[in-house]
Image 1 (cartoon, rainbow, N blue to C red):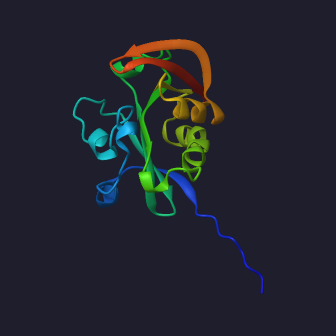
Image 2: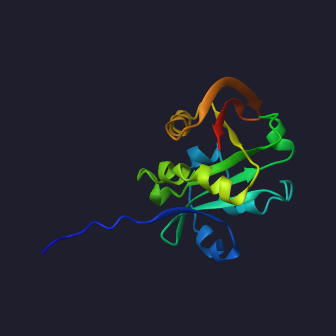
Length: 164
């Protein structure tokens, strides 16, 4: 008898309300909340651009991660590129951390942006200089550090770039 290993399918999908109940169960360790926000808190913030794309990292049909792709005023703090989007609030649910899902989710980012945001040619983000794990992850996923810094309310951040 031959046994086959079936890998769960990881994909990116634009948020819609059918995932709301699952995201209400989303959990992050306190030490990570200093660098990000809970998905539903971000999705329902009234002060972000209406053009923000809320993105879920799905494992099969289960939301395991979240991030936003913003434009508008906040983006301009990190980039002068009019064709860029700012990646914010990246997180993986506590029960799925340590399984490589962040890296797998980010590996589909460029294709996702090309499909859902035509004309966008770059994704930028700010990662707090104290958040070494996230910084390393983003570099492994193709983001480039061009020695730019943004000093935000939670301290200095590396500004990272990903060409799309």
